[in-house]
Length: 137
Image (cartoon, rainbow, N blue to C red; front, side, top):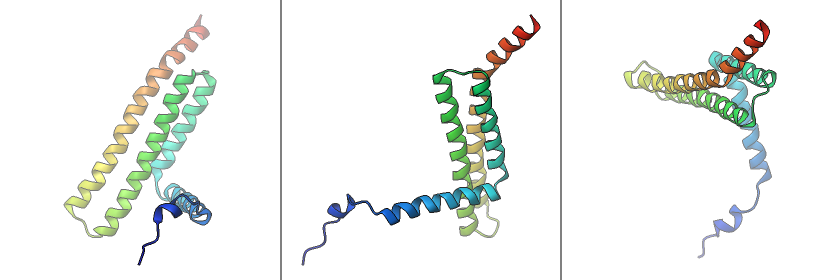
């Protein structure tokens, strides 16, 4: 008896599966925005950074840096949310390892946010100072 060749079928696009993967990702985004206050804050800051980017007419490279960092901060927040849910499921009672896992995941988001904020300051502070100089002079 011969086993079916999975490689032949793996190249075929399963439209229903693909559509469902986008649907479930969308549901995950919605659920995270409903339940996570920090995700809303990060998104608001991201929108402010994008507005500032247009206002200050930042360069192509500066746009890339800002957009990559925005994506990384939001991605870190989504991963943190997923880790918190899994930890809560696996350890409904308070446990030191569960706390450590959740705290460490949150620390990852915080580190990404701090690095992004410092990078944002490097990009935007000179532009803000230049604007202030042009207003004062």
